[in-house]
Image 1 (cartoon, one colour):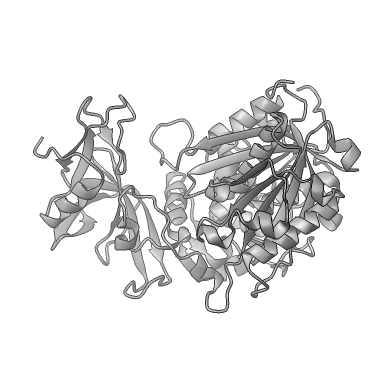
Image 2: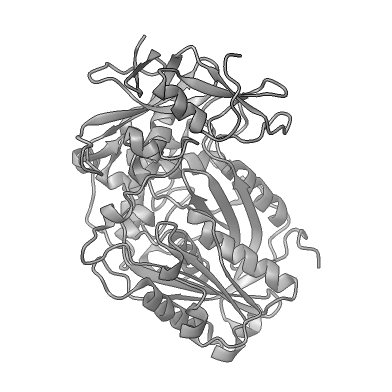
Amino acid sequence: MDKDIEGGATPFLAGLAVGELRYARCGACDAVLEYGASLCPACGAAKVVWVRASGAGRLRARAIYHRSYAAGLVPPYAVAMVELEEGPRLLARLAEGAVLTPGMALRASIEDGSLRFLAA
Amino acid sequence: MDMAEKGRAKAAIIGLGASTLSRTPVGSARQLAVQAVQAALADADIGHGEVDGLLINRSPLVPHEVLPLKLQEDLQFANLTLLSSIEGEGSSAVQMIQYAALAIRAGMASNVVCVFADDPIRPAQSGGQAFAPALSISGIPGWEESVGLLGAAGAYALAAQEYLWHYGLDADALSGVVLSDRAWAQRNPDAFLRAPLSLDDYRRSPWVVEPFRVLDCAYPVNGAIAVVVTAADAAPERSARPVYIHGMGQGHGGFTGFRGRQGLTGARLAGRIACEMAGVVPADIDACQFYEAFSFTTLLALEEYGLCPPGEAAAFTRDGHTAPGGRLPCNTGGGHLSGYYLQGMTPVAEAVIQARGHGGPRQLDRADLQLVTGNGGRLDYHAALLLSPSARLRAH
């Protein structure tokens, strides 16, 4: 493991800032943790270890916004639920113009700390 | 008497009251709550001084002071032995009734008032704006805002889309629920959206967050609803038409996606526990009043509560089985989509009306056992009641 940072989701955001997509595993039993977990559902340990994800994932769902709920969010835009190949589910933006099909393979792209998923 | 004794009522609802319900500002949530409580006490024909419990449910989108514990003073209930604000988001209304029943059975109170009030439509705020804050589903603080997943609609839309893709369905799959709700609303003079609606009309409804159209989303109103809960044994003396609580269950777990787990949400647990408590099976349920802030939640609830096999709820609703004349009437006042959205109290109120036989043109032939559900967060928090006009259910 190339990272060993305990705590909440901050290491995820810190990872993006240095161009790295991270997910969490249990430091006691190595189970894969969902984002937001502070305890391991398998063994109960409170040792969260953040590791680098491959960046590969699959599109499980997308919601297409046709209304703007805030200034700066110009519709239409899509928000995706991506399942990383390691297991955790991550909410993410998709690159503009991608043709979206159920279960399609995606890869993460991080530019200037901003995460997007593209067709793999 | 054991709480788990099957077939015998745990408590009863003896009063139902509503404030003015309106699409324009008609007073604060706190003022509306007082109106509803007064109406519920009048309906229950219960003296003001006989109330010893007050449970409060405010919208999860507003701060505590909108509907504070000080409501006790507004109402001048001076001798409460039970007072709390219940924090179950959309499952709170059902939870209030559950905790009222438990407190009564434990001897902590005798007559408990449960009230929900909300005023999402204000002079400078539309209903849509009131429901625009992000629902947290990512586990990463602030992440929803950073990816643009604002409003409850987007979070629910993701779950709906995953369901539709998984079963190979298109967005028309949601239309059965919308048309069924509207057909019921046409028989309910208190419903807000009563114009006839066709499938073509539905398809012309603009997208909000795909796969949801405007017509897939709840219709917000300002208003309040209250009920009075009392002991099952005391109910017949107090009310000509008590509505008995036979089953209560909760299940807390959010939408997991299709990853081989048994059930997709905590609703599966809530339903199982409620049915076990009542000594019934899902097939015994005559009608359902679901929490359906979005059309999709009714499809999912039909499956999670064991009323439809997985993946078949869309066809079930499109075939008219939940509509008037169908074999499992659902959301019989028009539901959240065509009736009105007062969160968990919409389904509770309709169940009480039907159990009492007060449904008028929409009255069900059979309402011996109704399922009432609450759903909070993004499919995270579930609570269920099984209600009957009978104090004893027939042995299953």
